[in-house]
Length: 333
Image (tube, rainbow, N blue to C red; front, side, top):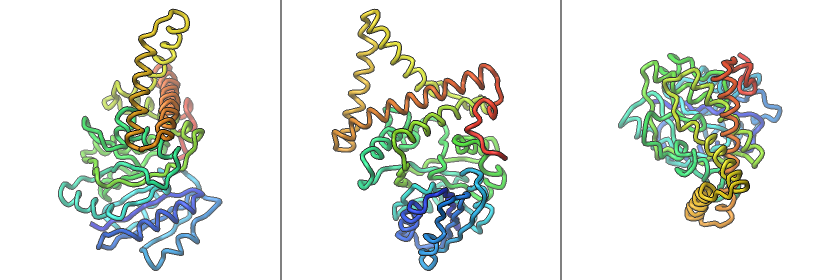
């Protein structure tokens, strides 16, 4: 296999610098290429790319802004490899990554794979707390953390691979964002392709977010899921409702306590948050990060849960067209 790495970027030259520096450190002893797709940035990374021209086989393209999915498709049309690996620009790649992917695909080939994400010690405390919440089995982050055990694995586009054959058959990513990666996974399954999780092919995902940006991100995740459920009802799961039910239950437990002196529901939520606090403390060895993890969890459930509820009402109950009901998720074709 000849790997072609595709990296869409929008106004993030510093992130690209870190990512490319990590690719220089790869222990992989076969040749591969890197494609940087600048998605209409006003702060370009072309000068950063030039720094690595002698160390890496790297190609730079600039195009009008059309979103990350379309930029990935653009990059996959420009490559010469037969297997494409996709990273977000805010990732740092461990030096064994390509070797792990090559070994896994040689042992058990699939036309699409995904890997989990982790946090580096150099990440901020908020980044570590968000990483914990996005990967913990106690929240909705089990898939990204690599703990998915039931059902088919849906790779996420911050750390994803797809064969040239599968890309050509599926036409790549759609124009919804976020949600373009599970949409692609499902379309690949329907075409007969297989996906897998390569647990050791993890990346360090910075996420480049504060609380406000984290809320916007998870709120959009929540809005995307009912749209995907309407497109592919056979792949809908009751667990997708969990954050919404969690938040409604939390609000109900407060009402029960204040107006009816009913303590049991709020005690159950306290037990849950204490368990989450202890788990984060154990994983991160930091009381501060454990506390921040509680904030991140509440933001995740609140943002995702009510984003899901809004989209579910508009798209699945009122039967409104997703592009007009939730226009912020769609780039123009």
